[in-house]
Image (cartoon, rainbow, N blue to C red; front, side, top):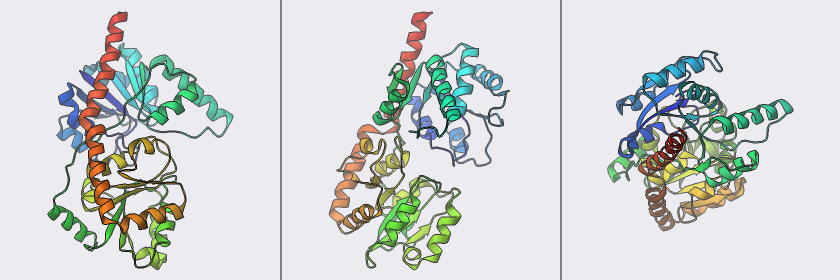
Length: 374
């Protein structure tokens, strides 16, 4: 089955859609992928791995809402023989639905966020227009968590053509001790220290301020170090805050912008995720795949992903985060139990192979329904 995934961009600073993980598992599910990006990126973090997996990647080099987008996308769908187009994020939803209609093939769309209410009447009208277009032109809308499905059903007033398909990630395997030690040495983390990793993009809403507030309040002798990965507009501000504060600069290191997340998790004892919202953050799935327990805010779809056996969920308050970090740092046996439970949870629910099979079932259902109407 030939599926075209349409995205606004493959730049890594965008929301992580997981197409590389999916591509690695697609063949076993009988899926052949092509990825079409409306814009072109100079950062090949996602482009190169897709091509190494044999996935055709087409970057159209178009600006946002370029009037040529539909025609050029439709042409690529025809050229690659796509039987269905799967869109991600609003600009791609609009273009993909129109291109699918032009080519007489179905379209499905994944929602990747739980969004706040629009600020003004104009934004509300735009949202309503997008909802109506989605209901009219999308054969299925895919939610990535149950809480996101309920949010969207409340927004639209209907659950018609709305399904839940949790994302998955590739299985990296549990790192061997030698790899773990070398990665920790590179980060200047001692054997007795607990390494806490945050891989969230450095932008508003991801909770880096909350995390630094908590780290600043930790007991002085607590053997805990923090590695902040990723990039974004807040990185200079975060670096400046850490540099100016001795309590922070002694614990926090900033990882290179292009550090491989799997390599960082190989060194980690805990993953911390302090975002104010989230439908189903992929960072949590990657941590559990690596057997790393999670400390995260109790928001959005996170409680669906992280059971109490695999991590600790906290409210959006620094004291609660401090208590969780202290408790897990001081209890090695509890961390070990959580690590095993996190890995088992990943294997049971979030492996990329299962994700590909679940998507294949949705595509089969859509195409069978279309054939029945023909």
